[in-house]
Length: 383
Image (cartoon, rainbow, N blue to C red; front, top):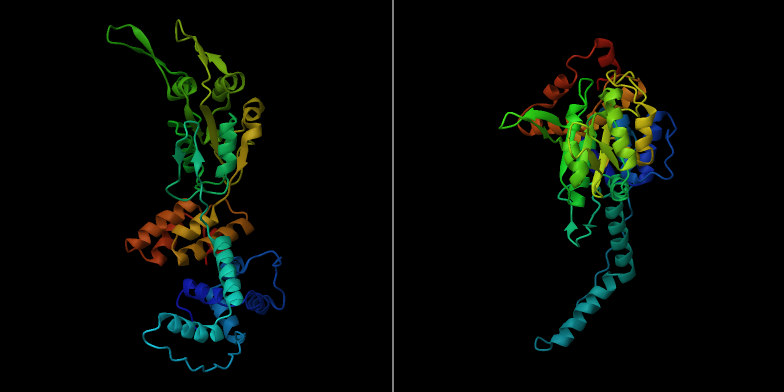
């Protein structure tokens, strides 16, 4: 048996038993499954098999491990009773007589229930409906990641939220979704080491009459009027600049001396502060070399609202080309195993899928991904 693509192998394996899939693991691993499979669903075992091993290895194992065949029960031939043409009730009884021999109602019910349960378990789609205080409802148009409810709960409780996860895993998109769900405006700032306090405080600029006038920032506007404000890449900001917001995030108000006559800024009940970071504020590491160590006083403002994110495989499975996805997951695993300062992000997989739909070949996509890599890095992960 040969498979042209990983997707074809995946579809065939899904039709086999979980025991057979585990037998393939044993065949390739030299007698051992190699992982805790008791609580792992068959679909996850199939995905792991095609991620951990090459298509040629899996195909060879399938050829040497024939799938079990199921005995087919002999067909029972039943003569259909002949019902009078003008008697519908007799015709219905005749039909029931025929079907009654061939159909076991309890068995059908058992099969349907099993299939529906499996479909629900394997479905990456979870339906969310958010009822706002004004009784209006929000239903997401697209995918919602598993952490959405935790973040939404923290937002409705008025907590400051810190989303921590690898590059391109969907942190900014999640913040957007929370704003949409709450029905509140959204604004953000990309934090850098060169970001000044004026980007948060606002500016004194010359007005029409030549006199200087205060111009508010998005942060101050959201803080006073309500909305969701995102500090994107907060762990790339100068820690001293962020000290400006400490009072605002802890005390429910702060002061702007440059805004004469209205220096006190009070926090609106509907203001939500979200920060996104690649680290937990502990400073640069091998993968994110440009990150700053955040002041503990700043981190404490977000302590109860920390939510750790990772790449959303259910979402990736839904929108990424199957062959590209299998390759991407294999590369991601090898990056982690070899502790390389590289990432295989959801963002790249989505962009690569668009390119392949536009005609770019799989080999071209892979070559683009590895551009700029050192030879020894490529040798450790290229598949």
